[in-house]
Image 1: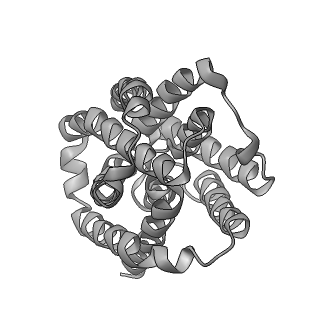
Image 2: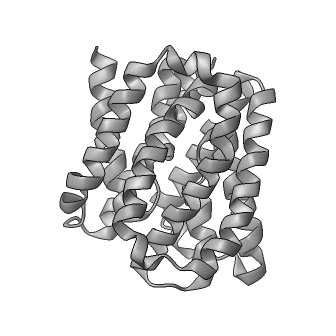
Length: 242
């Protein structure tokens, strides 16, 4: 019961983060759920609230989507997502835990140091970044940080950036979730109450919580999120390697 309450609260926060940053649902929910269920199940289970929240955010911001970026960068991301999901089905739970934890720790350190805002992939590198971010999304449910860094090369307005990143995340979900449905459906059904609570929390966070977070200075807000991501990564290494 205590974990369910915590998970719901964190889901609300993750939804609010996504509405401001364009990512964060998978990055925050997957490692927290992994501490409770193991990484393999967590990646598949967290994809459901991720899909629900991303659909809502896309609908709210659909008029700001940059279609040129969506159908080019997005296709590379979707192909990467499919490849990552297929690899996810074959790799061990412990290996996935190490990959996810390492990625979270690196992301958290870069964010706390302010280096994430300076990352630039260049025009050619954006396509590679799209494929890599999609692959990581399919593999361990964590794609937003790299996708955002790669998309900075397109130099599009903030609203368009968030809307397009959200639309691309939908393409990745469409590519990876059928694989999870075939491979992990029975295991995900065992934790369906957490999935339902997480989904409701994410939707509430997108609708309500974003209004509060927009009042926080962006630099301070990003440091808070980075610290949380770093802590979740460390928790996977030291508390629960399954």
